[in-house]
Image (cartoon, rainbow, N blue to C red; front, side):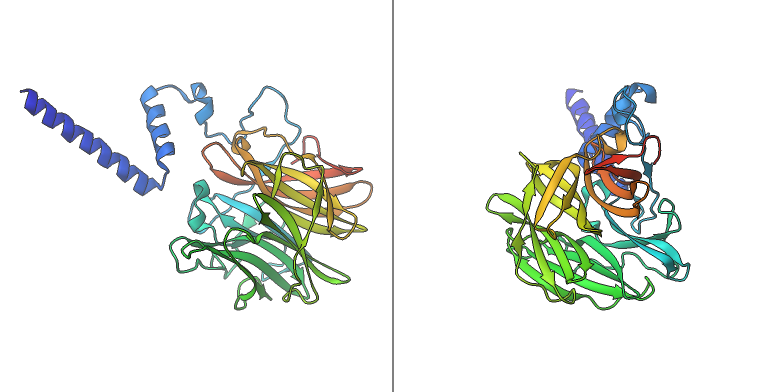
Length: 369
């Protein structure tokens, strides 16, 4: 009888294990999240008693009224998760594409931080909040490289000379040492894209070429990336006459960023200055956003404190790469920003927020997304 009971117990455990594996496969869930779901179901508590496992992204983390009131954007990503990160937005005043959309966003799916799906996808909007896949677009616009551990990421997009210019980073982890490359592709309609041209290449974990941010000014093009210097990360700048052939990198100075390191950034050009949204990290975790500005063409950056508090469930873990668009200089310097964030289960979202600049400090508009 004891033997039979033991056999039945083993069969039961095997069935549970098989069910657990099937859950992971069908739901594409990391084991940690799947276990958490099972534990919460077994507790049989009402949702109100499970505040740390809520499905309300705007749930406040404290009793304090947050200073920012963002709007989460709904993106129909090609792999179906709706999770995305690393947004970059180009604004075209007269509209672009078949729908004459003024806002164009490039971003990457990143469901539960699964980098294999991280290939650039494009969306368009009339107001910067409600986004659609433009007619004729097949996302991702940049397909995944052939290696099972390879992917494309860190897109940056500009509208120049009647075209969308898309810079992005290819990472090939399937090679040893790993390889990183920056590519450029362009489009006259947002649907059909030119064959990508390789601009920069690096091997190993030193010149990582992370998060290219490109602007064009009267002297040509400038690109900033984040790369490794010894055991630390740094921002470097490259210059180009045509946006394709780039000079050797110049190390940038960061003033005000103490005990933290740069990770990702986006840069825009303003009158007499450059503005940036910079992601910093501590120990390559604990990512947070900052506003930064440069008065010398992007060689020296003055970094302000944390841009936003971690106020809601969707952003309870960290803030990630963001993009900004200046909409007015009078009576106030006003900006639209789109930032990515993750909750503690690494569920990624992109949020929209209106900001104003007072002096050299960027602040959310109270009560307005």
